[in-house]
Amino acid sequence: MTGYVMFRKGRLGRRGGGVILYIKESIQAYEIKLEKEAECEEAVWCNIVTGKSTLTVGLVYRSPNISMEENEKIHNAIKEVSKRDCVIMGDFNHGHIQWTSLQSTGREDQEFLNLVQDSFLSQHVLEATRGENVLDIVLSSQKEFVDNVKICEPLGCSDHNQIHFIIKVKGERNIKIKYRKHLHKGRYKDMREYLAKIDWNNTLKNKTATECWNILKSEIDCVVDKFVPLKKQGKRSKKKHVSKEAIRNYQVQANDVEDI
Image (cartoon, rainbow, N blue to C red; front, side):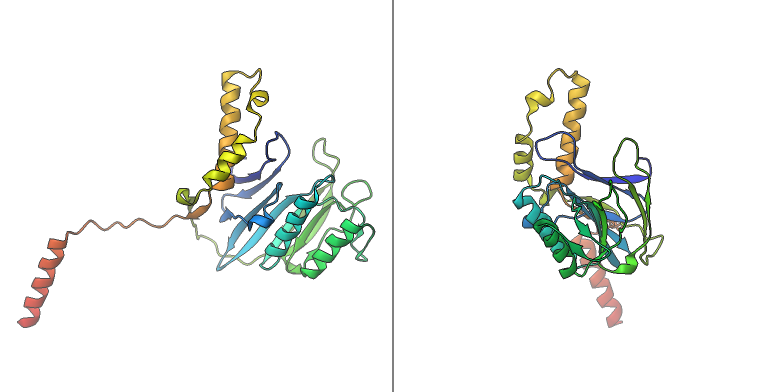
């Protein structure tokens, strides 16, 4: 999308699925990685620079057939991120929670409700987003961060309603910080393991050379975004190189002036 920066997280070893977060180019944002025990399969986390502070924004998909291990990672991620200013959104598939009365049926739904309350998060979506259930939610560490929540018609062929809302934070304009890939900090072992899990024979089967290249490039871009962190791009000095001999001559001349 023109004018936006894309942050995404794909499903390991499988095509399709995953989550994508678009942030305007005019907003200073960079992707962050959580602790290993909080690395969710389908979740992406970004820091948005707002003046002298940052707001962590997360997008999560929790499958209805999620494993206990992955479910625990989502809980760990929420615990970690909730310790800072944050907005967390996504499809969590907890359809048996009554958010207006803060009541629930079912063990997993009750555990998630307890997690939200124990983390002092506010949940802003109170209307059904799919059928009669509230599956898609918006959480925030401070209630005033989220405003003007609206449930709108589904987009395209989706059976989930859209959620429109405003994130309200104080910021400073005209401050542009550039980031670049921190290649020395890349997790290259994890990259190799990620790429090894892809069934390349089936993925590239009956594809043209161009299609194979596009698929390969897409996977490489994905793995670089996932395992190579960003760092601030410092300003290069415009000063010309000064030799040690020139510095010594300057010091000698300065001493002569003091003696006079």
